[in-house]
Amino acid sequence: MQKNRREAAHFVDDYLPALLAQASQLISGEFHRVVTAHGFSVSEWRVLATLAGNEPMSIGRIAQITTIKQPTATRLLDRMEAKGHVERLEKDGDRRITLVRITPTGSRLVSRLIPLAREHEQRVLEPFGLQRAEDLKSTLRSIVELHRAPAAEAPEDADDDED
Image (cartoon, rainbow, N blue to C red; front, side, top):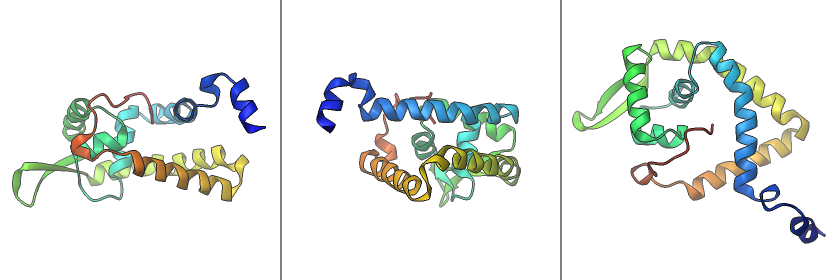
């Protein structure tokens, strides 16, 4: 029966990457309106949310997690550093390796949005129940882990439009 449904459906109606992209675009778009209403760009939100509560990380890793192209992430981090939201550090005194961490100012700013993001996530997942929601998130984390390239190998054409 399942096979017949798949054969009858349009390809993209049953194709995982298309479904993930559509779901991401719809759900992210809802929250992006909140982000911009609080004076952040979507990219700034992604970077601050990535760094919040984390150890300093490389620009490549930030680009990978936020799905922002690395050159774009570098320019964004320059602007965010000028605003005092993030700061760059040398890794173990090695000037060749730069890490980025969130500043106390950046932490205060993002701490206002994280509870709103959690509320949004809860509204999105509530219709599915706690167990199905956790199973979905666990499955997605596994997919990301299985298909993630190391930060040094992350493709330069990572999609800037997804969240």
